[in-house]
Amino acid sequence: MATRIIALWAVPRSVSTPFERMFVERRDTTVVHEPFTECFYFSDGRASERYGDAPEFAGYDGARAVEEIRRAAGPVVFVKDLAFQAAPYVPRRFLASIANTFIVRHPLVVLASLRRLKPDFTEAELGFLPLLELWTAARDLGGGSPVVVEGDAFRAEPARVARAYCERVGIEFDPAMLTWADGRIRPWLPHERESQAKWHGTLERSKGILPPAAAAPPPDAVDEVHEPMYRRALEVYELVAANAI
Image (cartoon, rainbow, N blue to C red):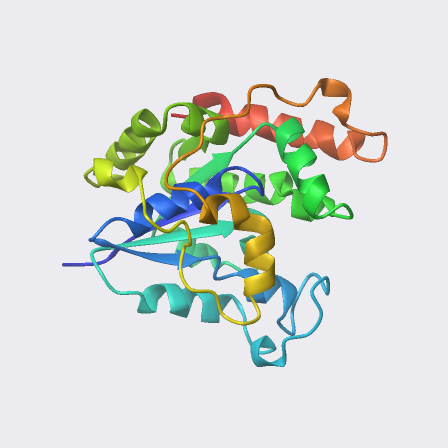
């Protein structure tokens, strides 16, 4: 039986890792977590030096990331990555061979959350423009609108959204996906531990999908510096989320 590869391309702080965590519970699925990180931050062709050097990843590139994905075994391989990390490196030929899906969240919420963790984030790291690039490529390659999840809608109705997602990508929904004993995606490597604890601490303490916050950030939560990128992000969000499940 051929392996089916499903990719979830995300903007940061979009509930993408809890969505990914569901797939760890599936017996038929192998999860590959953010294989393009090393390309973006640590390779010779990296786009950012934010996290310093990791010489062991200097030769890492898009082909190596794809190789990592294809090495994963099982009937289903579920790949989650941030669109900004993947967009400069993922081969379009690879995109054409897999099921491309997307997860977004309102940029007001993304900005408020991202600013707490990475106050000097760039527009690329905000993630909406790279996600649009991959969404457009997937739409053109697939000849139709890709599957899109809205992060807060997922938090509000996890069973409904997860079931609809599974139906759209052609796999059977399993209610056991919605709860877990250990919130970690996998044991982290030494160079990952500090970062993963910072970004995914709430998930790692969780036993399932947490409901959405009671109130979203107010529109004036966007400061003058981030206003232009917020407006561009909002345009992307409204386009991509228009047909979210």
